[in-house]
Image (tube, rainbow, N blue to C red; front, side, top):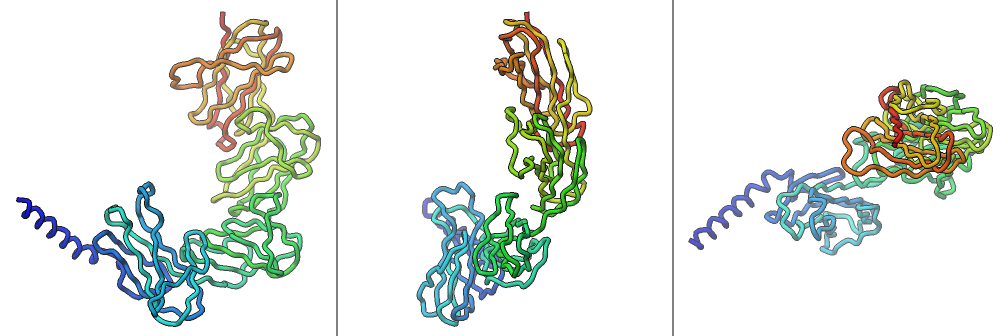
Length: 419
């Protein structure tokens, strides 16, 4: 019986070995050129070899990866050798992330050889990408490397006619190189933005599809309420100019395809107020503030909302919905309690956007509440507070999210006296 089972296993492996190369695409054995080559391998058809016709002195990028499970134990990235026509292994001249760069020593037919991982992970799909870096000539503003225009592991460069003092936004761009060969660092004013030091031809280096370069749009004066934002390229900015007053509280919200940042009149970031969700700001000085809106994917139809707190006035026990609340807008209320009195607060709101709640006593001290224990289902838990002073206490509810649709993220505040 043992000999019979062994024979069956050997037969199955033999059949699998015969069938596997036929289903690969192409699973080695061919001469390849620049491009992406995909195949399948397993313990049955390893090692895999390809040949490549190279020219002495040429720089060649080779990237190899496969479909092994992310958590495969003791398995690093696939390893390979580039073997010269005389049989010697060509050393790696440089490495760009997972891509190895070779300088070919001679002209002739090279061999690319790689093996299946040590552990048997089944049939894996591998991808072998071979490329040379390219200079693609002049480019203007806008998308510069559409999807499908780069081979994985490849670097391409463009020339850009820049002006001294120009602010250039860069998304998916590895380096911006000045006419004198030095790299231009980010200016720190806007995310991934450089200020060009001189007028001349700059080199834009890219290793990924979807790269975009842009200038900021002209600033737009705004007031409280909704401001439609012009369509923005990915990474492009527009400043919304708001006349603010020292001590004013400003809520900031936007649709989800644009990010926003509040900056002072001297163009430094404004730290949010003490509530953790960070959509409410207290303005430190009087002057013209900048709300910097930065484009993401497809910003057509984008809006940004600026708001002061929505005041519910003096409230008693009960439930207080907030119809008409703008995205990012906080709400405030006042309650009168006596020293030693206990009361509790909770909110009803959409799942995933629970707001922060702050209770401040008449003297300005922040009260710490005790949340109820046990499971909750449709709301935040009740949080119980004990008053340390008599008088009017201020309640503040600040939303967590900065992006939403008006009316879609309403908050209901509930107040209940105990005893």
